Amino acid sequence: MALYELPTNLKKHSLCPGCGHGIILRLIAETIEELGLQDKKILVLGVGCSCNANGILGGDDFQCAHGRASAVATGMKLYLESQGKDVCIITYQGDGDAGVIGLAETLNAAYRNENITVFTINNSNFAMTGGQMSWTTLAGQKTTTSVNGRDCAYTGNPIHLPEMIASQFDVAYAARASVCDVKHITQAKKFIKKAIQNQMDKKGYSIVEFLSQCPTNWGMAPVDAAKYVAEKMTVEYPVGEFKVKE
Amino acid sequence: MAKKLLKGNEAVAEAALRGGCDFFAGYPITPSTEALEYLSWRMPELGRVFIQAENEIASINMVTGAAVAGARALTATSGPGGSLMCEGFSYAARMALPYVLLNVQRWGTGLGTLDSGQTDYFKEVKGGGHGDYRSIVYTPASVQELCDMIYNAWDVAEKYMVGVVILSEAYLGQMMEQVEMPPFKERPDRGWAIDGTGLTGMGEFAKKTKGADGMKVKGEGYEQIKEDLQDWEEYGLDDAEYVIVSFGLPGRISIDAAKQLREEGIKAGVIRPKLVWPFPEKAIAKLKNIKGLISVETSDYGQMVEDVALYAKKYGLNVPVYLYAHGKGVPGVRIVRDFYKSVAAGNEKEVF
Image (spheres, rainbow over the protein chains, first blue to last red):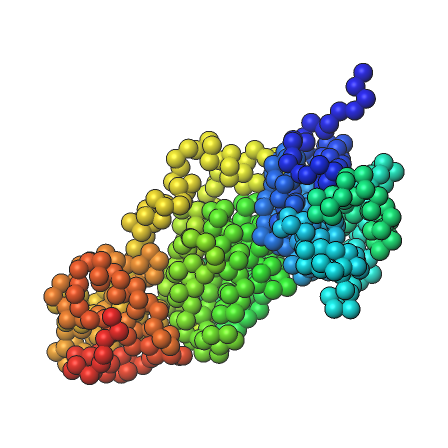
């Protein structure tokens, strides 16, 4: 008897060992399969490590310009809806993509309460380009552009995207999950399911930010990186649901 | 069908809908805004998607998302808005997505002014965004032409899988003329659009229709467009001494100027490109025994004049190329006529 089987719609990826993306993508793939959305899913991809999700979840993908996924998803969803097509449109973006260069697109889609699902992966750095400071980088955290540790007095403070959206806009759902251990991974899956189901129920905009370990750019072993998420990142970025529209 | 007196920006919006446009995303900017305003009520009336976006970057990305999902998508802008969209044009070109841009040109760099101008020639014709791509660029000279060009724009965009630009001008968008509005068009099945199944997108379409025209975009596709789409209006080329090359409203005025010059016995000729990419090089190729070429344009330093000189060289015309760069607005007939005479009298210095 098989104890665990990979979702049939998940293909091999080329992410680094110990990276949180792989876990998150597996959870999304499982959820899509469980909700029976394999033939309705369009993954709208940001630029960065999220590019690695190209072609690995089956269905349709669309590779956007850096930061513009929410705008692309808006056009796609509104048009397909006008054609009577019931599709599940998910953006998959890093924190740099959704919360730095694409902050305008992300917030404006939330402002309009577009009926889309936004997943943003927060690994506290610009990982694809080799670990530069992001708006999510923790105070004092060393990156290739904050070599002495992030000085927030100079750079501004860590950005809290789901809280910002939950407090300002009339959206369906805003939450933050973590994939640092089994307990959190189980919780993350529940958040994913809600965020996707909301769209299918036409409830409106949903966003989930995932705290994700980045062993490569943090210069840590995978186990230590997961520990860093649990002990450091969750202090700055509390895990939980910030807005749940009934 | 009876003609109606319509304003350029509103007429072109209605003609776009009749040509099958079923998605619009845009941001207000003078002198293009009437198109956005018109579509904001007209599209919901027809059950089509209109969205007022937060800026032009979002507008073109919404257009891209809709286009890949099967829409006949449109955005409209001017000057600075068009600059913001350049990133999106490059991405759309990379994916060979068909879409239409209505650029109601204002004059000037930076914020520019709200005057008419043709200062976006380089931006539209030479790419604008990063990378190596071309857009098909129509240059209407009347409200009727504006309508006719956008009416067929998606047919062309979908055939060649290239973005189409309707390069309008402030005065053309703002002026009223008699127009015969074409009927609503039946949309042909494009054959591909993503719908979440992973089976009906462009990639699958390309596999099924190996060698289909629309898929051979890069390289030979552009060569095919050059062969198929060149179009221009010409006047007096058979025995012309100097030939004015001018598009849009200055082109229309140049023809009037040449007619007046002919009345005085001066053999003036005009090529008015109806598209500036592909450039009407076949018209240049026909020229014989001319004394020179004159580019008349409402730029400051000359933009199209460089292409006029390049195509003259290509077809072995060893003649001087002059520039009348009017700056903002539109030159009057007398100004163009006088410049021609000044060139003929040897008072102007050639630029190439």
